[in-house]
Length: 313
Image 1: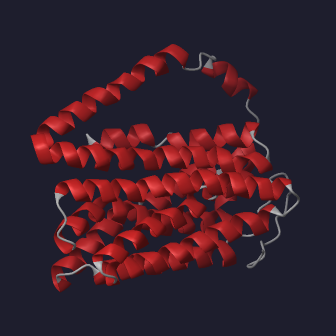
Image 2: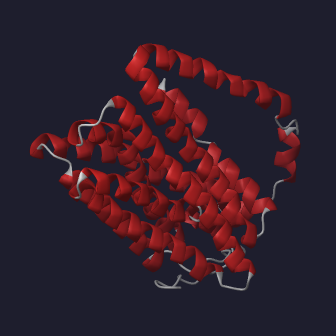
């Protein structure tokens, strides 16, 4: 069942990015991507908030059944308003874009892949281990865990929306996309790593505050990450580029829970798993600085592509 769900979800971000690359100018992509990121964060937020409360009262089986049935309601608006354009017509009108080999030849493509890997390492860790951490390490009830865990993702959603709008306003005011997008990525990753490490070291009250700040800090990155890819790849290559980026980025979903579980089993506490996640966030920030080049469209028509600069701000 999880494999089927993954197959269904795999087309989402390539599809989003294709639409935004085609129809949104540079100064509008931050907020557009922020709305998507906010929606993805609100799912776990309400899932933890209401799910944790319901599990505490009725158990996990009724909750899982109800969640699956409620999710099917999405089929009603989708069938009603889904696009009806003939796919054969779209394929006939599509311009030929670069192949995967050409995309792999771009240093920035590898940079965005590695950057997403480190960002998703953080997300997969939080989704998998945050509830258990709050209950086991902080000795919170299921109800308290649900409220705090939901608050973390809610903070990330609100921050993403605000920061996406701010980054766009900054670019529309005349600032370079390279500086603005990278600044949000770096500041978000560095601050999220600091607050996350402080969370595991501080007393309970401060720990909760630092956890909320961690979520808010990560909103800086989630609102700008895919805007960078969409600008670099352009509408001709963004689907393939995003597919590659997701393949590398989502591999952290295998690594992060396993590494955290191994360290927790060996040490008996969460300090080392939290430290590894913080290091990943900081390494991700360095990736956006030193591996990803200028945030400008790649010239796919050039016969010879010059090597991208290592550092650009």
